[in-house]
Image 1 (cartoon, rainbow, N blue to C red):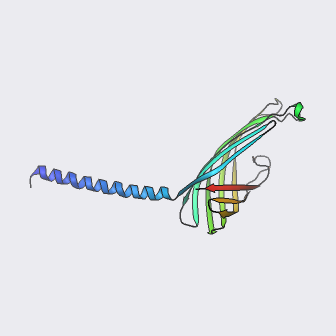
Image 2 (cartoon, helix red, strand yellow; image 1 turned 45 degrees about the vertical axis):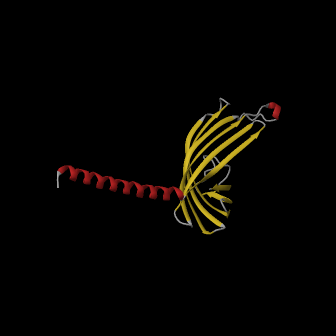
Image 3 (cartoon, helix red, strand yellow; image 1 turned 120 degrees about the vertical axis):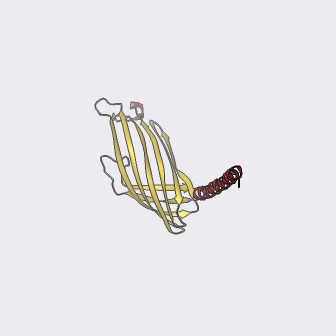
Length: 183
């Protein structure tokens, strides 16, 4: 066999292996992405002197029909600006920006019940209009254990922050209702 023929056969063989590996990688990647569900939370609250906006997307990889693991991002903005005309003069006007992420594990032992564990780590940045109150910027963890009723892509339930700290947590108390939507 001459060297030109050997080079051509080697090139063709290498090219076929590369195509095979690429095809298998695409099947594995498409299989992975077909098991990922997307969703999260969107919150809007507008009232006299108060604005709150929250966006919290999530992606969950469905390991099997009963278990999913994933991650999420959280971003929220709160502005409280009351004045004497509204009957409030407590000097607690502020702006708060909250950014962070979470990891989540969900289990559905039966189709109607979903239990979850959600670790959240958030950066809280508070700016007060009152010069006597010090602005603050800190990180706060939360570990929520929850349960809910599932109907298709919607889960309605409650979760409890086992790390709740009355002085540092951004939530009013450790118990939080939730609506989770995953497609």
